[in-house]
Length: 624
Image (cartoon, rainbow, N blue to C red; front, side, top):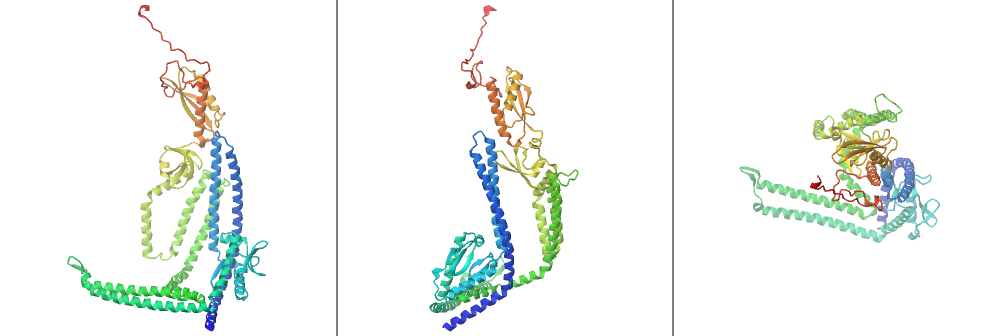
């Protein structure tokens, strides 16, 4: 029995070494690719970390400023909150890029397996260590694990990890089985200590499992398991056959009761005899299907009993997929056309980069073309890029597989019709977006008004324009609606000539207009963000029945905070008018009081102020 065991182990080792020899050249090629990928990975990781530290310091500074603000500093609070949100958004984007970068590099790089005694993969090695490549590290670790297994005096619990200068070493006695660095931990998304502890446990368990697998008692048990599986296989096949014959007899005995001719009016679709034949055919197909499933389950079970035969089950499963070889042959034959497509793509790609360079020079105003504005450069580049890609697709189309078949042409026409019918509104918005781009009515960040909607432009695409209102509502407006309506831009001249804000107030005829003009101008000058040069001015826009309508006009630079400026301006107008004893009659002052009582709040009146008496003069008839 021991001889048989050793023979089976020997055959398994031969198959293992043969597989290693076949893939050795490919493994070494992957090893060199991994080294290049790792250098790029480490460089990107340092960039992400430096960026994170800078944003962290900036966030602390902004939070300290925010905590020191008073309730009156609303404008500064809004600005600080905006900067904090920008940092949070940037960090979220950086984390997403970092995760995507790591996932991308993992797809490019291939890990090299460390094998146990049972030819099972214990773990993968991705990074190099010193002069050793990942492939060489994996081989060395596998050899050392096998050497530990052959040690008759091995104490498995003595396989531990210890800290060295720049790594953690998994050791047994004086033998260093493997060394782990931060780079290894980075690939596995865990700490170095956790990874070393996990690998130590894996190595100990692999050695214990191998010793248990190759024991004589275990071998006898597994032979018994194989015999039991074979017996169960025979029983299941016998049971399926018995069930099949019983089902045939049972159905045949009741066919006259269960089955009738399937007909409609005078036409018979299926007779009872045809129906019973179809049912028997379904039973036969089901029988062979169940037998195939039983064999499909049984053979992997049989081969999984012995560790050195577990790979054979995979080989048998692969035989099922052999028809797919024809697919790979077709791909191989298609390679010449694929290379032609790649050549066209790369030529067009670098030509587009050249075109982009010229438009970038225009955008940065290094290259100036009369009549062509700098902010037209990128939208125009997008149009040119789309046309170039369309031309590239025309060149590539004949090289696509099946492009000359009638089915391919029919599907292409069908998709074109669907696109043209279903995208009319989208195309209208795209055309409107192009027109808006060249009209230049607004740019990103401008405070504008479209119809009844006022807000800051946060995004401008070919299809839609997005505004953020003062209530932090995001409004999406189709470009066709923007083009068909009127657009008011508050920011266009605010930085140069200044934006004029205005507010109306109605005052009674008893207040001299010069005094009222000065009061309104003083209120404007007291308001933060209102310019003193150009100086605010007042217009009398109407003389109504009960009051005069004054319009205060003032210049500001910050068009995006009009609401806050208007609020402070109105507060100052109230304060100044109350201080100067001026009643605001907007639009009509209605109150149950005598004609001499003022509407000015009491805290603005003198302490000894008394309401004048209401005078009534009666003229008697005898005095006439």
